[in-house]
Length: 134
Image (cartoon, rainbow, N blue to C red):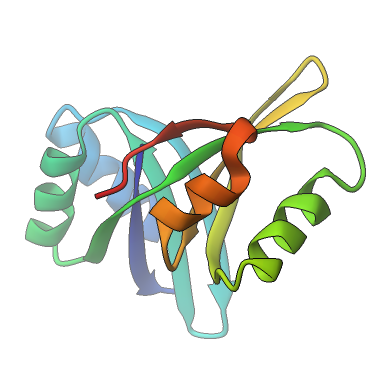
């Protein structure tokens, strides 16, 4: 799986402009997370067509990158995320981002990006359900 990360000023209308740019190119947004840090905003998206989405966002003047991610299945209960974080920490792997993309019937699906996705996939083994790593 891939994700798009867009850096944008923290001001009204940024998500609308991103959504409009993608809609104009026929790209479907599957999930998004928005976070702000002072004057800066970070929007993380999953979409149906990454190459097109990246081109559309860059053409619209946004600073955007696409990254490979791992999909992991977690029990939807306290401590599940902690176990993942500890396993990665113990292996010396830096967790760069993690987003819950779906919660259903006691299971959470999360998308994560590590400094070494291939190694993270090895360490997390049985909970990895999807990966695109070099």
